[in-house]
Image 1 (tube, helix red, strand yellow):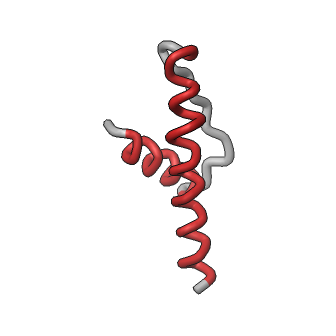
Image 2 (spheres, helix red, strand yellow):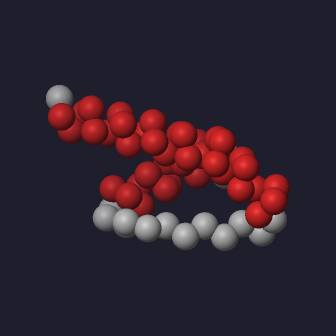
Length: 56
């Protein structure tokens, strides 16, 4: 699964009503920076795009 797929899956959880998602990486020191710098911004972009479509 690539980073875009991870972001899409997480955004989908939010669309389904999840208010909290707990992430437990196997190697936090290696994976948390990637998650914070690469995945979270993608999820936010997906959510912004969804909000614009819903408002338009």
